[in-house]
Length: 126
Image (tube, rainbow, N blue to C red; front, side, top):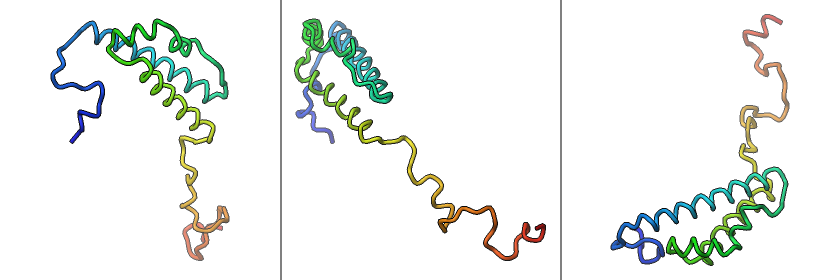
């Protein structure tokens, strides 16, 4: 069961407000753009300030959060916390592939094309 009192944005008795939803979507698009840009920057080793990041320090961001009925400081804090996680992921050098790939296939450490069994189909050909 989800504790709805803990969530700041969920309210069971909240009326539909298309204008508020429009501004929330504007906010979502801005956050997605920033996270995509930062993800690419950290992936390719560029750690610079981007244009999308400037938006979070502008008065327009505060106004959009107000229209979306969110607290701008909380939104900014959560977004930059997510960016820090992305930064840490690439600084640690996490890879998308597993390190174990193919190691369990060979029981011994030698890599050889020759079979260890004495009688195999290929041993007769050699």
